[in-house]
Length: 312
Image (tube, rainbow, N blue to C red; front, side, top):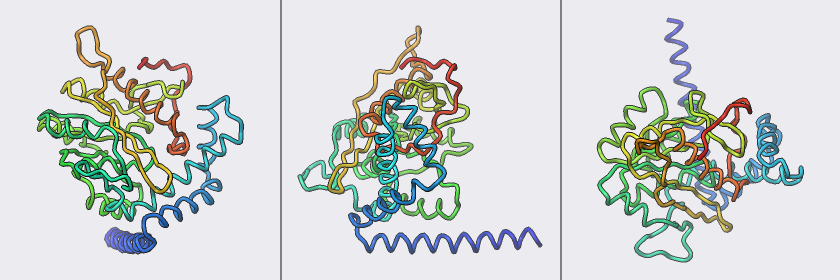
């Protein structure tokens, strides 16, 4: 009886929270995409430095840029908070943010795409494919782009820890993206089936993974999920990187790389660990170009400095 009451209470609380989040998204929709983005960025930029994770961000930036003075470190951190706040507020407008038209590109579009030919090639080559990305700009847009252009892609995502937030975010994502798969136990079988059936996987690879392979990231060892490297070896399929750059004027640019030439072993097979190092090197290049648009608040580096990692 007690367990039933607790479960019922949890369900009621979750329903209330989901309703509150929907109401908040409704408020953001009333603001419109530009004002919502500005509001979210301003709020996060103001509140972020007072949160405990701000210390993690500052420590990460200092370690990644040892030559930077304190003014630049703080500027990057504030920019990262602003980008995070903008991205959060933009969830209410995901169905309108991506307006790029491949057949009739317009100079006043909110989004532009570099490498759209690679999206089209992936869609039409009748082969499985892998697309990796990172928490840069508004990182939700590539999945929307793939869905809009008929690229059969399953986006692997990490659900928010709070059930109510996870449910509300999933509702938003499911209206604009293709297939979605939470990164949880058993997800590897789903991912394998996607590739076996000629589909495509999209996954963010820039966060710590406890059971991962050690790769260099900003000259420090970092643990990274090796699953994309393993799948690249197994299926020997094209592997692309995609990033989102936040531009002035509430605009975005998506950039899809050509297929990577991944490292191979003596037998000519893709080396999974070295492949992940190569992908991570691409991500590092992206972050170095726009450090203020990356998620520095995450504890990315949790490996002793004397641990060796493969060269990309």
